[in-house]
Length: 566
Image 1: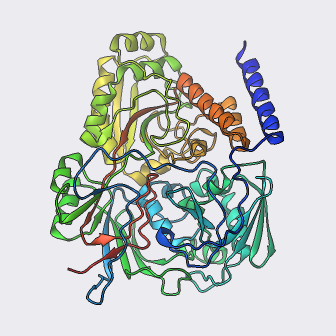
Image 2: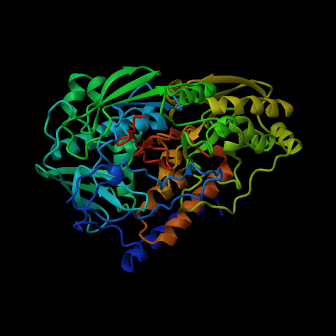
Image 3: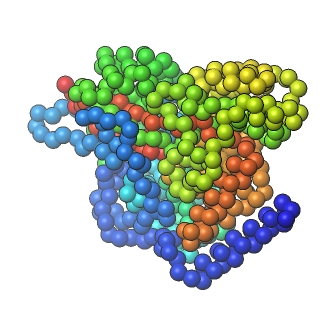
């Protein structure tokens, strides 16, 4: 069967499956929401008495227990509440060490895709709804939501919310956000709203969205950190600082590019008021410096620590350790626009030349985990295709593939964003040199990496980066869909594009799973990207800190952090 005939057959089969599912029982029963009369609060900071809208289509599971163990080691489900009592005093400011620097807090900028930027965006912008670890959606700016058919969604909004600049929040702001996102393809803000066909303010506090087609994952897309509601007037008046005006509990007060930013508490916030008054989130590139700052009390939180330094904190009563294996993937991207790299024989040569356990150990020691199979998929993302074997480490086979490729000794650039991947790149260069590939390393900061390696670029060849996955399979859209914010391979496969479009319309879970597993098979065969390793991601805090929502998707929520003064 030719490739085109196979594509047609698969698409016809999937379309028939959708039609059959639409006539039969909806085994997920999640396209409707509506008020339940429950209360919210907890990690999301909502106020009591609000109405909720139901549960996630694919309720995320808490990832497996951490491999790091100790008396002070916690998982994502452990959110420490503030102590009570007349003698308890809380610190007014908190210093948080970030894993990378940031250059913007604009949801419609490609630079807000990394975890450090998402931490800031989450503090500044409220979304319509948020997702709890148990898979329940809870209100933020929306008080209730409903969809009769999975394609038309109606949201009732709060009437007591103001932006940081004093403007009243209304349904028009939601309309403005959705429409403005269309001007910024290739960003996570764009990806959050791209399913929307039309958006209408029914009245001042009701908004209706009609999607291009049924999408059972729509709620999951719009609870993303970069789906926060923006203020159009502020953006027009000041394209930089105005782009950072939201309705959230924190206001940006100082910003030093790629160094730090400071947030001040929004005392006019509509919801639960943070205990802390000021947050400073700082980029500290050196792992050893991070550990010293924690030990000296110069910082109370660190979002990334080296494996070598873990012994300083585990079972140390002065600290708490939160750990999880992140859904996101450290990976090697092949630029499919490059004439040499686009040769499948060259890509196979590279894949068989690399010994992944050595790359993982070089990247982050025992914190890094080599993949157990060949699927390029999030560690805790649903529907992983575990039947795909890893590419065998076989230098002789790699040389055979290289001989069949168009490669003729040219210098191949390997760009690496993030310090962990810089270290892995040293080993990659050695392993590829063994089979005759001449590598030039280009280690960049996160901001440069994000800008240069975005979809459509024609300057990179091999790119070490991070594929951002969440617990939802729909997160693969940003990675594999043509034009996706995380598509750093310039990958554009018509069959994959069609499957990614169809999968969210499938109300039957088994059919959706089959579609996502087929996507993984195609990616495995074509090899535009390969997994290098996953990472167990510890967050270290001093023992007097709590209120952190540690997210397996690495969108950590520091909005309601507290520190007890010693």
